[in-house]
Image (cartoon, helix red, strand yellow):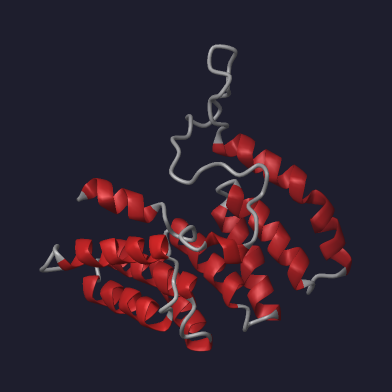
Length: 200
C-alpha cells in the first residue's frame, strides 16, 4: 500500500500531461532522490542528480530573460507561466507558486494554469490550498480530466479522504467517456485501490 501511495503521489500533474505543454529541458523527475545540499556530481558519479541548490541556480539562470521582460510587462500571463514552469521543473515549488498565482490572477479561467498551481501548492505542503484551486478549476470546467485526477490524488494522499477521491475520479470517468483506454485503466485501478482500503 505504501508503495502504491508513493507512486500515486508522483502522478500529480502527469496522467494527462499533454494538455499542459512540454516540460522544461532542465526538468528532473519528481520523486528522484536528491543529494544532500552542497553535494555535487563528481567524476565517480557523473549521472548524479544535481542538488536543489544547483537546480535553483539553473532555474534562476534560465528564467532571467523572462524576468527581465516581466519588469516591463508584469501582467503578461504567458511570460508568468513560462517562468513558473521553469521553477516547477526544477522543484522550486515556492517560486513556481508565486508566478502561477500571478498568471491565474491575470487569467482566472485558465484551468490548465490553475491545475499546475495546485500541483505546486501540494508539493510545497499546502494540500488545502491545492484542493481549493482544483475545486475552482472543476467549477470552471467540470469535466477537466487533469483537474479531477489531481483532485482525487490530493484528497486521498493529502487529506486521507477516500470518499472525496473516489467522487473526483468517478466524475472524471463519467465526464470523459472517450478517455484513452490506458488512462481509463489507470483511473479505474486507483478507484479499486482506494475502494479496497476501507475504512478510509
